[in-house]
Image 1 (cartoon, rainbow, N blue to C red):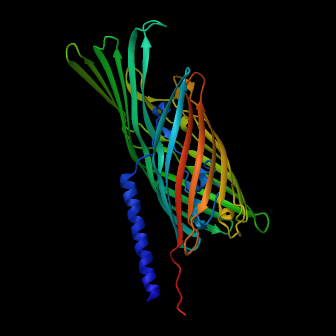
Image 2 (image 1 turned 180 degrees about the horizontal axis):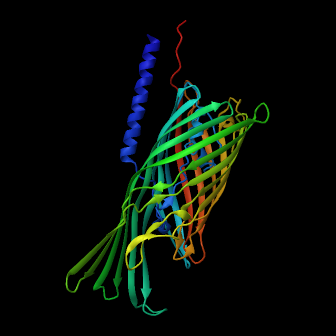
Image 3 (image 1 turned 180 degrees about the vertical axis):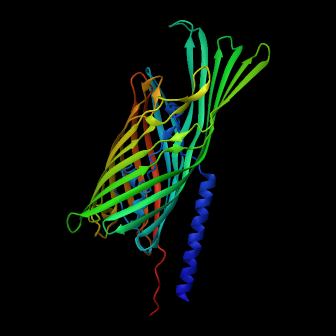
Length: 436
């Protein structure tokens, strides 16, 4: 009777968690952006990292443990053990300082970040389901031009606003084919809307040109992964990870509307343009190395390449709205991180705290008026704090802080501090109780 009761309870917990995932997907929105750079391409790209590897600056292609979810490489799902079901969710908030020509301004944003689950369905076969951001768009600023340099007579005021982004809900599977080799795949449903507006008014404010862009995406995304784990000593292991994501057309039809108004004669003219199948995502590659010593130390490094340079992107050039080459460029990211646990065998809480740190570098994936966009330097620190209870302390509170610096010659400089808080809920739900 006890066994049956626990089996029913475990099933109820699974149903509750599936309901949570559905509710999360329905209410999901990106954590947000306030950057003018998010107006280019499909917005600011997300690292798609979760609680544990945010503290390591997003390192994860060669990371695999049975008590964490790692969507960066679906091959890692095969490390899950038979008694575990993991739920990992997180929130993030950020403060960004913008600086241009000696002027500074701050902006805040934040919200729900991600939600993932992981459980085992068969020996060496793990399944993960989750919701992750893909890109964020969010900005609101104006540009003012003057009749002559150094005068106060305004010639034209142009306002730029944008919001939205792309999200993904995925189902992934990881399988350990043989003891050192695991493979996996994430199948994602990619969806979202991007809305952008440009409003320009002359000094007399009698003529106003309003330009509106809309993009709606409902498509798929595939991510393949592999991990090879090689023993170096009794408690030392080296893991090599690799990922591949094929690029494809998103079957989206971007729209541009031109609206000209004249307040003196109360007249408005609207011209609409549409590009059939005008959005695509690029082919992407990634390789990573990971070293682990017992349950005490982990080191990792990742390299990723996204082939945005081969993707055409919609552009209004004054004559019409059409796909253009040369607006985007290949994006490269390099990250390195470390995780250290002082004393896994200690009876004290401090001995089980996971201390994390990482650094990274990324190139832009777009051009701004023919000039390469801002490069990105980042660094992070984080902590994984075990949550003790009467049964075990397998659940972890993940806290991380990240500093990101973006800059380019003669362009806006950004300094962002980002705080992420996540909870990895990890309990032995499928243990069979024995009556003595």
